[in-house]
Image (cartoon, rainbow, N blue to C red; front, side, top):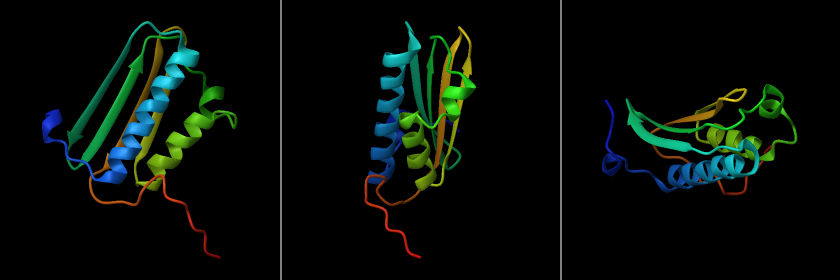
Length: 119
């Protein structure tokens, strides 16, 4: 089942996380992709939320996806992991990049809250 945007109600943690993730994907497109077109979709599907951002730029490389210097991608992964979701980043040389984030619906902590480690 696909939801209309008005049907998607997000708790504050997911709302903030999706906003920041979307913001970071657009920043990456603007800085690195050389794209002329970006498409984004947010869907509520079967108890989860899916954000997909697709561009027609140069296409991210595997090295960039897994690189330690890719702080924006690392931040996206941390936010998604904190909320129990999944992120997939795929690039095709000369054909663009697709970032897909899937988050379970429900309550969660704030992705901007300080993390406490107990040992």
